[in-house]
Amino acid sequence: MENKGPYNAAITAVGHYLPEKVIDNKYFSDYLDTNDEWIKSRTGIIERRRLDRDKPTSFMAIKAIEVLLKNRGIGIEEIDLIIVATVTPDMMYPSTACIIQKEMGASDVWGFDVLAACSGFIFSLTTAIQFIQCGSHKKVLVVGADKMSAISNMEDRNTCILFGDGAGAVLLEPTEDKNYGIIDAIMKIDGNGGKNLYQLGGGSLNPASYDTVDKKMHYVYQDGKSVFKDAVKGMADVSYEIMMKNNITSEQVSYLVPHQANKRILTACAERMGISMDKVMVNIHKYGNTTSATIPTCISEYWHDGLVKKDDYLILSSFGAGYTWGSILVKWAY
Ligand code: COA
Image (cartoon, rainbow, N blue to C red; front, side, top):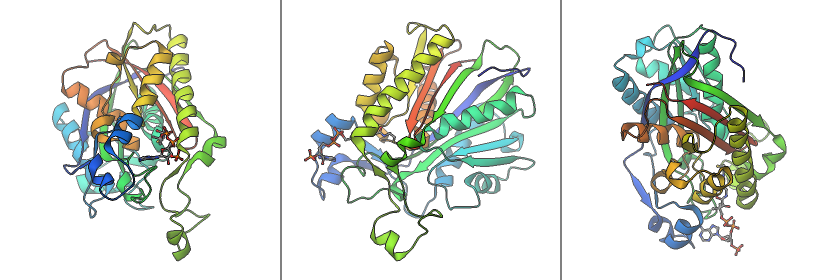
């Protein structure tokens, strides 16, 4: 994606929040026909976090933003745009961005939500950089937050063991040095994959009714095998494409930051790209698949552990419902 504007967008602060309540694999094997060994070996997940029933997605998003603002040493009043990636907004509308703005007391700001399932964060980041590159906005918050426990069928062993709740946020600011920041982004969609991963109920096609509830249409449905195969190919191919386009070798890549859907997908993807696993950011064992939050929570955790440094090349990559997928090349700027 060619940047014709005067600036590059650089990530200048990060923050994340995971709810305290830990749900281990035994929690599920106590009432479902599953077991710790199957879940660990087929997905890499050991535990995930769950938000209290009475708390919404914005609660986690605000916590993540608070960490970010503290670490950047600024207040919410300096933010001029808030973009929120989520498939579990607090409600259909107003947007979660509006709720965050009100709760945090941000003024003179605008914002909106982006719906792109597991690719929500990278789609939001790609949208956000346009405003920085052209110079119209100076401090843009990009948040990935999902309360997947709100849309998971806890009686379906195929899906309920996979997902967790969490939020991560990054701050984008302009840099005049175009060697740093978000260097390139390649995003794709293909609606033919829609049949493999969806939530049927609650929209205009199947508005909420006793029937949609009885038929469990307000939960995530996934054909795991098909999505697995398509995700490995989609993520590896687009990540390879961005490396080739920008003349970056696998040796130069400091970190691959893949969407955390299944540890076996991460491994297969890294293998296809020729990247060793010690260069792959992983937190799926602790948090499961937190949908929009997987990539920003990974980056924030690694950064807070002192593992991300100036000049590092990061490749962010995701694949999700839609299908939606893409890859972003970042050169860490601070
Ligand atoms: N515990 C025990 N057995 C389980 C189980 C569980 N929690 N979930 C499914 N199974 C069973 C299935 O019923 C099936 O049994 P059968 O052979 O008797 O029919 C068997 O395990 C194999 O199921 P399958 O779906 O083929 O397993 P899998 O190896 O493909 O793993 C997923 C399932 C969901 C973990 C995996 O397909 C996956 O991660 N898919 C992609 C997810 C993804 O990338 N999403 C991206 C966007 S979020």
